[in-house]
Length: 117
Image (cartoon, rainbow, N blue to C red; front, side, top):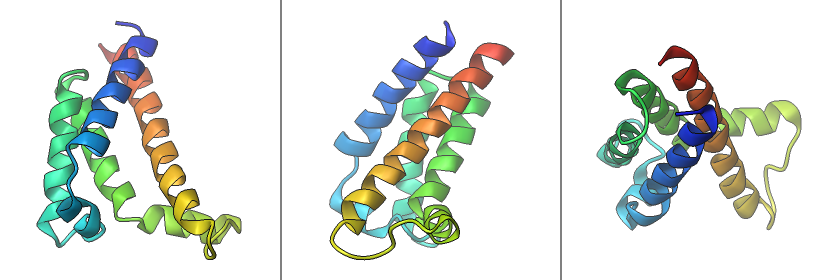
């Protein structure tokens, strides 16, 4: 597969896991590494990524997904870079920034997978 193939199929797996296989319990509680919902959601992401990527790349994606979903890295980035942190625009901004971070990780995983396969 090419890097583009890895990325497209990784993106399909990500969308399925993040938008169709995530329930309210996961969405509300995945922000804490101490809550099982974070690990269940990350496990679903891992399972989806295994359909596309080698084991260790899928594992890296699942870990990055887990950390991004705690919101800590993106909250830090918004504060560090002086981005939106409050107001009506905050919720859609945070949602799309979360998805953008996952997409960047998928792109990196695609490049790693194609160069190490």
